[in-house]
Length: 99
Image (tube, rainbow, N blue to C red; front, side, top):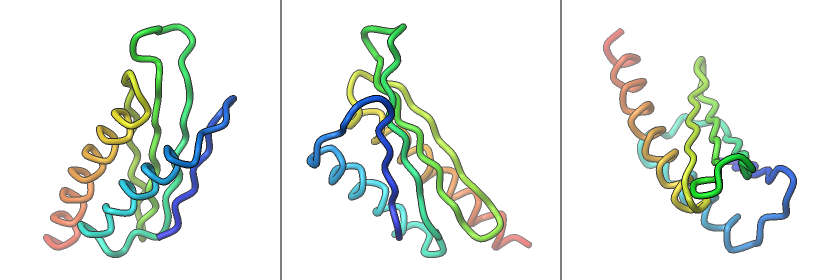
């Protein structure tokens, strides 16, 4: 799966990018038909404590899944968003198999 990472208004280091790609890539274990994914990283200037935002969009045949999380670190936000997407993927698979 192709993972596209965009850091908005800052440059993400290579360790962070590798971490995100690895985490998002693991979603293919739950659903093989994922076409590609986009990850957007932003820093919220208004909230000092949990100001790192990770948004992940996953394209599958016929459906786009999306998760947005805000935490203290990008790693935490990515973990939470990937977990949310894993749940969405599970529900999506159940629905498609039920039809």
